[in-house]
Length: 60
Image 1 (cartoon, rainbow, N blue to C red):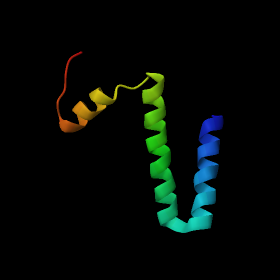
Image 2: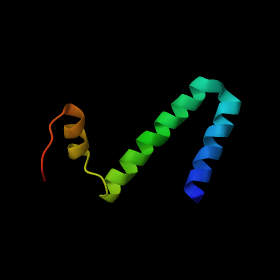
Image 3: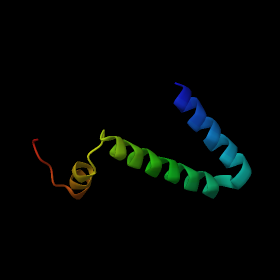
């Protein structure tokens, strides 16, 4: 819950300070950081994600 509040506050302040495009840029960087963080912790398999995006699905 606290993480959601922090993310919302960060995006709201960014929107007020830098406008719409600044908001999109910060949101993109936050998403990239979240994906890289989960990958570094071992909670996300980037190979599996990339295969799913390319349409290569496996049953494992």
